[in-house]
Amino acid sequence: MPSVFRHSSKDMSMDAINASATAVQERLANTLHGVVSEAEALLKTAQHGGSEQFAAARDQLEARVRRARSELADLEDSALRKARRAVRATDRAVQDHPYTTAGLLAGVGLLIGVLIARR
Image (spheres, rainbow, N blue to C red):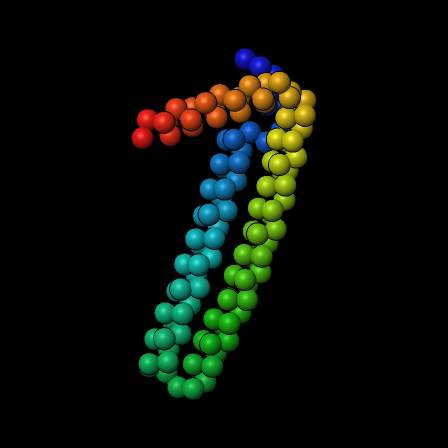
């Protein structure tokens, strides 16, 4: 197998990328579930409680939404850093193995051409 397909210790493996993406999705889902729960609690408080209880519940919900927005911004920054790292790794692999890359791209182009011609 050409060395372009081997992962070095410096490169992120696909397993690590998938595990990281899954962890981010779970964290995001948990955060959104929490915000929804807070919103539901706010609605129940508004229906059954007085204005003080409503104000307290609203303040809690606003704080939760601010935390969720902050966490989403952090996740976005993390995703951008990982994407840039992947682009740099791909660029290094292409520059280190230009003939292998050209051969792979020619094969992909040929496959696409065959698929289009079959229509």
